[in-house]
Image 1 (spheres, rainbow, N blue to C red):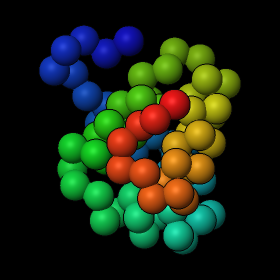
Image 2 (image 1 turned 90 degrees about the horizontal axis):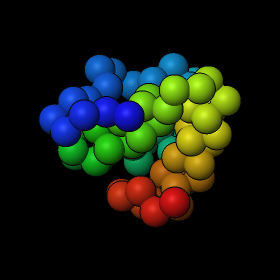
Image 3 (image 1 turned 45 degrees about the vertical axis):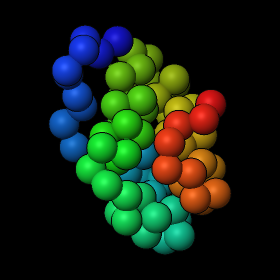
Image 4 (image 1 turned 120 degrees about the horizontal axis):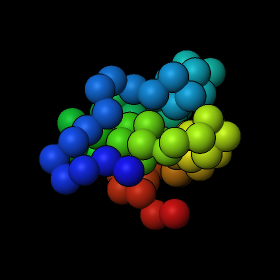
Length: 73
């Protein structure tokens, strides 16, 4: 778990791969402000296990395809 004020650097690989395969979600993600992008990246990238990161990336992709700015899990 990230400590207060800590953030994941860049886009987690799991999320980036899914975004590359889905133009609609990638375009929406890129249109978001830095803070919304950081929220998605922190949520996906902060998971300790690879399987959890993959599951979160898949959920994030669905939310981005639905035009959701914030995480609603």
